[in-house]
Length: 440
Image (cartoon, rainbow, N blue to C red; front, side, top):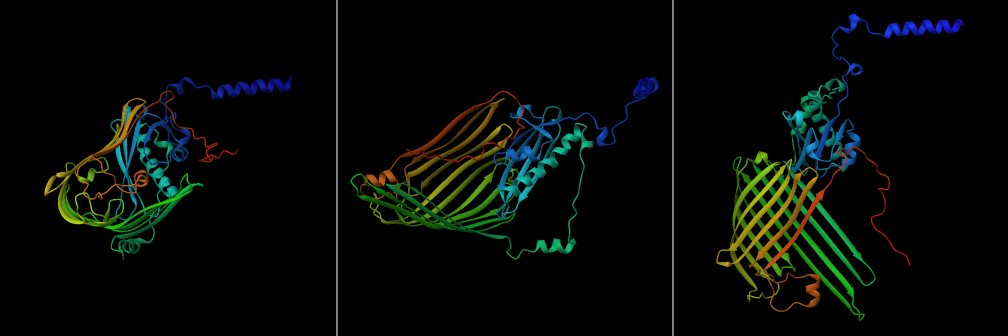
């Protein structure tokens, strides 16, 4: 009985202590001053629009938001675009676009990766910038109290900054690449070797790129009668590009090349072509939109391996090229298209027209359309060798065939529906083999 009375007294005292008094109930609610007294949590809905991001990593690393599958369900649309830097790295531009109740909030941040950055460096650098950009939107939702800010001060002082500014390479960057691959089975095999050396220098006023390259391809077959057939092709050359900025919309430059190709029946092909380009939008907006018109007259020196269908073993030709191109990346999708027309100045019947298009449109919620293709109308195949090609050369495409057109096209539709959220990461059974073998 004693313990029961003590319990009743304790419960009565506790109820009196936690019950709000009438005077307390009339007092205004104090504003939160710490995380412990923060307002109810609100999770930001984010649509990450990035073609090269590691989405599983982002969902794991940035877990304080809700990822949605469609941009129309998001409060923040993050559009990530990229372009190469002069030093061989990549400049990523992150456009934070507010939607719904945050439609009045917009921001743009940049992240520049060094040439030596690994895939892990890239994804961590992008994640850090995305986190930084999202804080502003949480602040507009009254959630700023849930974040802390830290700052890492630079070390070394002015002397380190001055040392970093000195560049013994004067902004020149050199790259060397070599690669090879092969495949085969009992009756055939294929080997391909490729290599290149590039030197480039990019400033606000100049863009210079010098490249030499070479390639070799070989195929071997055992035919049904037991005989062997070998085929090979090779090409090598040197190209250069020099461009001078003439303001926010104009540029001038030149291209030159010295090449050799068994595929094109060219023992030696030399070309020099100045060019001028006008951009209808300022170049500073190139990560989101470009609309350019470029004109380039040129002169060509050809030396062929075999006599051509026009009875030429060498010739000199002048030409001119006009190219219009558009590149747009917006929240509704992207467009990349170009139309190139070219003709030899001494014979306008020798010409070509090439149309390229890449399109990705989000037409409405959950539904998207994409296309990718190229159409070429050709009337300028001066290099075609006289005589007939063998069936093997035709099948293996070791020589360019005579044609008046070529094309490739890809079209697709995508539609998804269901849950708007896209937060969960589940990597199970993700490391299975990419191929299979059947044993009999």
